[in-house]
Length: 195
Ligand SMILES: [Zn+2]
Image 1 (cartoon, helix red, strand yellow):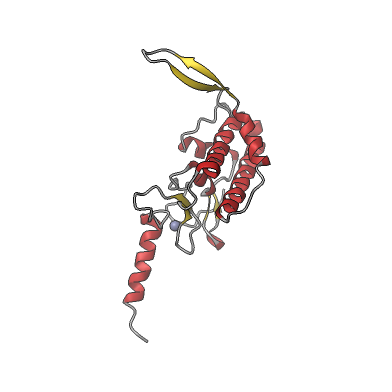
Image 2 (cartoon, rainbow, N blue to C red; image 1 turned 120 degrees about the vertical axis):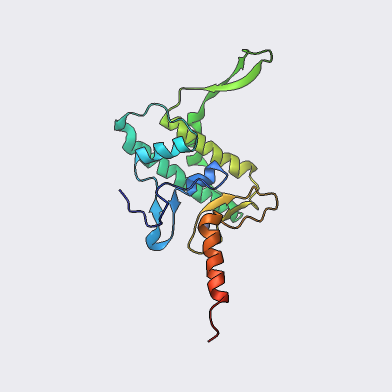
């Protein structure tokens, strides 16, 4: 079990306001404080459930492969999102392999006065759960406003977020974490006696 250096952070922060960026935030901190919250297949499953994604049945025997696949998806997402930030073109081949797990068919559901057209997929499974993450990444890349995709301004913080505030002036992963750290540093700087 990895050691957690930032007090209060024993689970990945879900602060990004976007599923794809919350996935990137499962790697947090810089330097010695760097940590990967996806330490095991079970840690990924717990994270998926916290994020509202049903990972379905998951035999213990597939957990090593599942962890490897989840981390590979995350690395691909980080690469593609970073390229999109820099106005470069990325290679979507790996992402598309995860999306291929998302086969679904249209179905008409008519259990109320108003019928509804929905898409029905296969049973929830770890592979489909990763497909859901891949879809969030693809949607961000295709439809996201990248002026609003940012990283926390604190120099020791690498957390990403999608700025959905009205003023579009969000600067911090969270006010409680980095916003207050920044304010305290400014306060110390202002009150330091002149040399
Ligand atoms: Zn931060």
